[in-house]
Amino acid sequence: MLKIGNQTFESRFLLGTGKFPDFKIQKQAVEVSKANILTFALRRMNVFQPDQPNFLEMLDVDKYTLLPNTAGASTAEEAIRTAHLAKASGLCDMVKVEIIGDSRTLLPDPIETYKACEVLLEEGFILLPYISDDLVLAKRLEALGVHAVMPGVSPIGSGQGILNPTQLQLIIETINIPVIVDAGIGSPADAALAMSLGADGVLLNTAVSGAKDPVKMANAMRLAIQAGRLGYEAGRIDKREYAVPSSPVEGLSVSE
Image 1 (tube, rainbow, N blue to C red):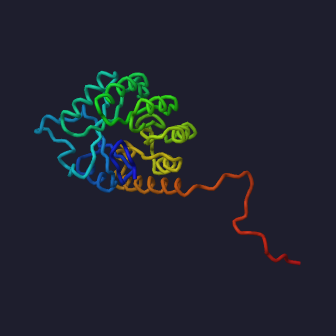
Image 2: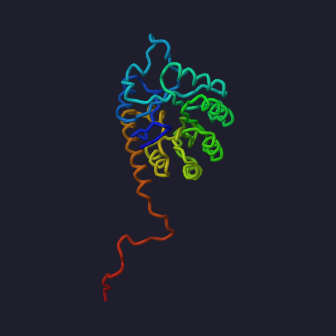
Image 3: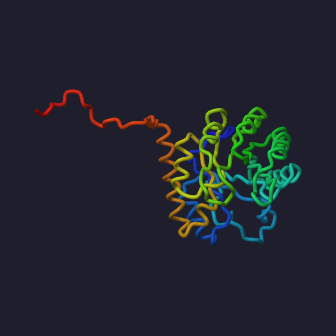
């Protein structure tokens, strides 16, 4: 079970709801993913305008935990304001803090992220900040009291996969809160690798919504995340420089 704050989830697959071709495909992808947590950019939704259609109307939202994010924020103040809107809308007290510090690379701003988390934790939010694969920042945020960290493994939407698996593994091995990989995953192989390194979960959006068949990709990612987690729990063999016989040699007869 994945535990975030005081909540537990059966699925380690978190799914973003943006960029799908239409609401029908989005709904099918969500269902086949078996995700428990759905994330979305609150600033792109008209949650206070019931006459405007949005994905919440297409889903039985009682089956899911909604994770609004603060996408679009470039300062701590903007992120805090968006989190307050999420709380006022009654959606959830769990928020993904996303504050972009560079418009070209879309890398997160570590200083503004820390400042926003400091304020929102005091107000009782369950926080999952989006960060770079920065071990020191992850440790500082854990000490501050966040409930999970969400390191990107390559630029948002790039599909480049895990550029620095060593850095990701260091974060996983060092901190004691969930590490949920966010941003950069492109294929089921990437998702399986992240989980086999010990990640607690994977959040996906573009890798699913941008696929030629988003529904089939959602299923593939679900299976990859499960396989990676099982492989991590099973414990892989050590890498060796030379070959090791797969059958024991002791007791074999020797031909004359």
